Length: 158
Image 1 (cartoon, rainbow, N blue to C red):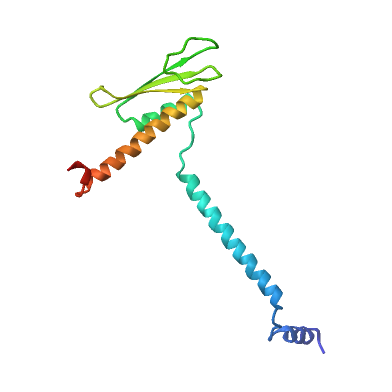
Image 2: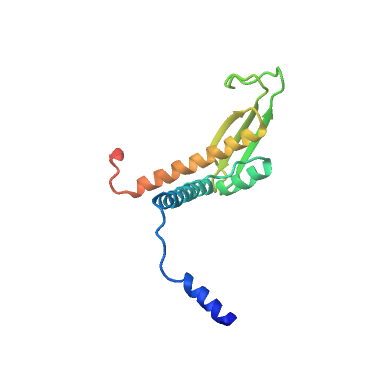
């Protein structure tokens, strides 16, 4: 026999037919596939929720950019830092650390104040984040009110 014939015979000997896999191997493979599908679904859910969550504001430049987008006609903020033992306004929350007071205003197209708020926080970054969160909450409420007013059946306005 030649080398080419021998190779042909070896190849033809392994082709065709198959031995059935033992039941425990089949169960193992199916369970691994199921675990991978569950992992994929969990990762997809996490990524979807993570993308919808707005990024936190960490400095004044991010706050400036985000509030510029959220307040179309302008806004203004004043930050007051209180040192240890400094007198604070009577409506300030009780705190063991010096407080940061942030007063912010939103303007309309006629430069009138539409919203004026004051927030308290232990740090400047947290005060800026609270201001942005307040504005985002306002926008959510405005969207809800708009959706309700667009409906014909508004039972509480009767």
